[in-house]
Amino acid sequence: MRSSLPTVIFVAFAILVVLFALDAFFFETGPDGPFVQFTGLVVAMCAGLFGAAFSMLIQIQKRVSQGTLEDLEGGADWQALFIRGAFGVGAAMIVYFFFRSGLLQGSLWPDLTELALDPLKNSNVFKVPNQDVCLLMIWCFIAGFSETFVPNILVRTESRTNG
Image (tube, rainbow, N blue to C red):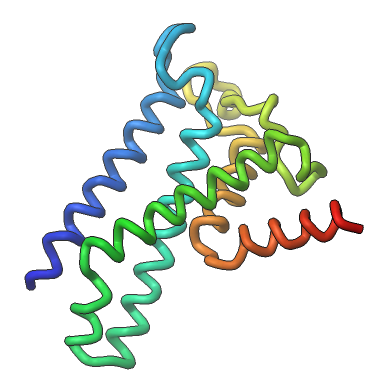
């Protein structure tokens, strides 16, 4: 049970980050609010953290079904959770910067200048993320989830610039 405390702390931290980002994105903080200009980056970071957490849950399920209790305890220490979460956030940030730079463009990629909330069918009160916000969240979730997604993008970009 010693390893459950870091897990609880990590999950609580992840929830706090997600709630903070949702607050910054969905509620008015004024034109000079702290996250108004970086809303897309905050959303990307939260999606990357969520992707990394989801990946860790799947890995824990595999360890439980295939391994011993010692294997499970060894893989759930706070350092591993923190590093994996930080990797997910970092990968999502790299993908965000690829979108921001214009190196990734097309109908499958979000247009960061169009991030907004759209009214929910005949309602001016309820709003939902538009297509570009959803695409940003999906790609950043994948970046946080997959340990090879960002390295593959970097290799492809390098090969395009070299020849």
